[in-house]
Length: 151
Length: 155
Image (cartoon, rainbow over all chains, first blue to last red; front, side, top):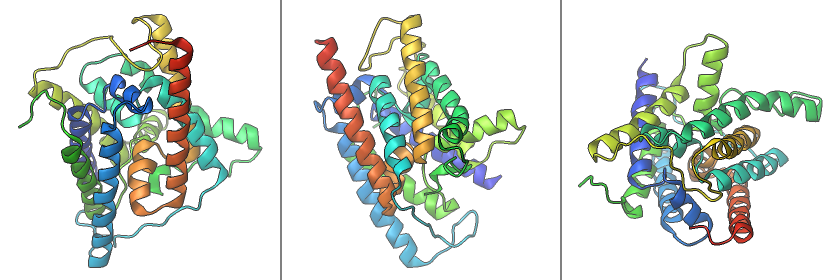
């Protein structure tokens, strides 16, 4: 229960920041991708720097997670073909829509209802992906795990 | 302080970074939106209650609504100004749904989206995430410029 509440609160902060910084505005993403405006690049870059430092300090401190009490640790994947192929397909959709999975959720919250079309497509893509991958590779090993962002 | 004006990058970026640290410090999980779609889908198809990532995604919607309400900018609209834009209507809906479909297929194959790989994974030092981020940025920048060049003069 506490984990779910933490997720909900984290999501609210995330969505609020995304909307406040206009990352939920497709025209802002378009201007980033056309290299007209560095705003989103700078947001992502500074977020990564702050998070990278904070995560290492957290690991150095050797504390346990406050809510779940598990040791703070993570494992990383080596680059594989699926990272390149999947990200090319993802990047194509991103450029056309001018939004991605988090900003489109914030956009819907702002009342911009065309985002629902993107979200419907996202749900369909996520639902069809395991079947499509197993058809192509004739094995299920490439089907993503339940929580693919566990990195 | 919270106004309808665009939050500058040097406020929004570091706050997002702190959010990633906060989620790691509390539940030892990465910030990523894609997992929420998978979680909610599984919840709908297998009668399973949404977990952390599903609630995170619901929270993002609520966060957008909270911002729009606080700034008085909440307005239901069908207008959409992306790269390949037409007037609101069925063709626009089809284009957006297909773009969403590509994102869902691609991100699940790659194991993460802009937030999961691009922010959280790269901050953790994942080489797979770095490869994913470089790939989707290169692809999206190239395609957005190509579309704009082909269609011409959209702004």
